[in-house]
Image (cartoon, rainbow, N blue to C red; front, side):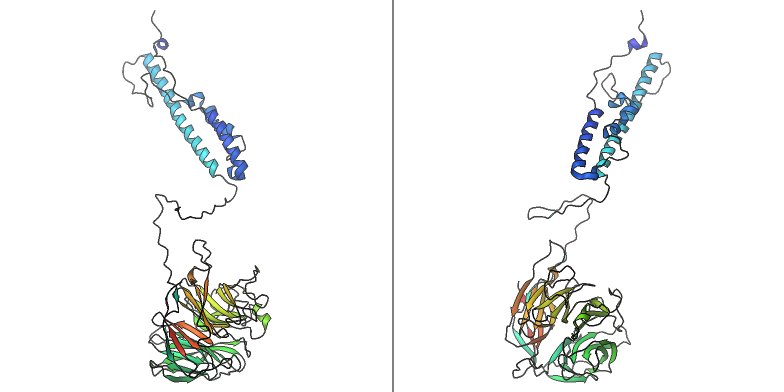
Length: 503
């Protein structure tokens, strides 16, 4: 008796190993239960609240148990498409092809279901109800940061300037100065010095000679007041003059003026002063007085509290502040309080300098306990008169370094290389602090504790101002003729000291 088409169908070979979705689903449910216990909502179930076993078995319910295996032909090879129908096909052959096509569809669905399952598992690990904290990885000496094939090439970190220390020879540049307060080096090699009590701006010649350039009208010296800081600004156009700015004590206030500069070395002249900013409170002490142009092109000025301690905490007051203004004397754009104040809570700051990364530093006289070196940031409050020195009060910014007032009383401040140099009056020395650009950066991989060292203790008397010299050296000026020192023959003097690698 002839066999039917079904009977003539080749026997199905043994099935290959199956991907049991039910077992995988159970394992996934256990994995995500563990994840929820350890990570909370970071491993919550996506899509809906049904158990993960129900969601992961959705392909089984949709496609049936056939979705768990591909079709394997009698020859042992996978069949993903039926052959083209030819003429004279028998019913058995058509049935066979129909079976192959059906199983091909099932195989395609199996592939889709497997992809859905993989995507579901991946998305579940990435689903979160909120931001997930990023762990902090500290690279040790034998670890390297992970890299990927698509990561851009790492840019080398900027190389900081070298640490330089005043260990070279000391040279005298000028003598017989009268209470000198500020020194400005000009682009053409000239040097101007302000004298506090005479109100003169003098020029230092290449041979050390001293020549009067002008006596500024309106200066009223008294106590710590008089002709104080100087700053230079180059003309910004063919018709614009170079300008010298001066901070001085007048009859009723402290003020800043500017004067056109003409001539050259040996023949400098200053024109009539024009007021840039007036109304800075004055007193017989705590007058501040340092001025300097920052990297942003704005003029910065230190203003003491003028004996009114509480004013240092008032952002609207000009006293007890570091001020920031345009070259024409208007509040600079971006000032934090809407006026001239850049930072508040100062007693009597007198030194300004910027490090290689553009950060502003200031030296400040304390009351009777601590003198300070501060890293100045926009809108920060440095605590006076509520605190003095490193108080650890979260409302205020602590100084980076502090000294007993008998060891410092810092006035001028300069940066040479990566070294901060403070001029100490009562302490009769120089202080160095390094490395400036790597102190308090906020990056644990970069931050370095400041190294603080004294130099020339008692050797030259009171030191008022410091500034970078033309050849990588440091210039400093003494202040023994200001009424508080012990003048020596030829005082006061401008000197240079070689700065050499160290630290």
